[in-house]
Amino acid sequence: MWHHLCIDDPNDALQLSNALLQESLPLAAAVGIGGFRIWSRLDKHTGGVHFYFSPEASSLAARHGAQSCEPPSREDLGSLLFGDPIP
Image 1 (cartoon, rainbow, N blue to C red):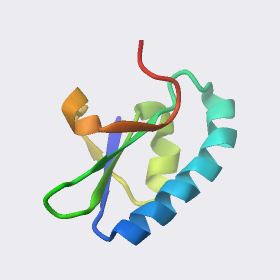
Image 2: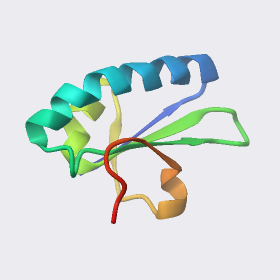
Image 3: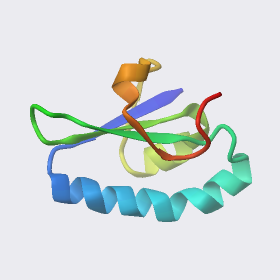
């Protein structure tokens, strides 16, 4: 299941981005880096940041309070923060 988390404060979002990067490598190694992906997208209207977690990253998403969601569209995803690009 996909997960989504929105952080309204840009400074908090930056801190979370750094934490996600540090925590992702060991977790991705355990599940296989191919499917473990995290995206981030700046909300131009609010200044907040949306984070989307692939199903393989659900344990990390849950650790940070992300909520389950429907699979996002490519436009919703934003930029790949961690993981291999989708072919």
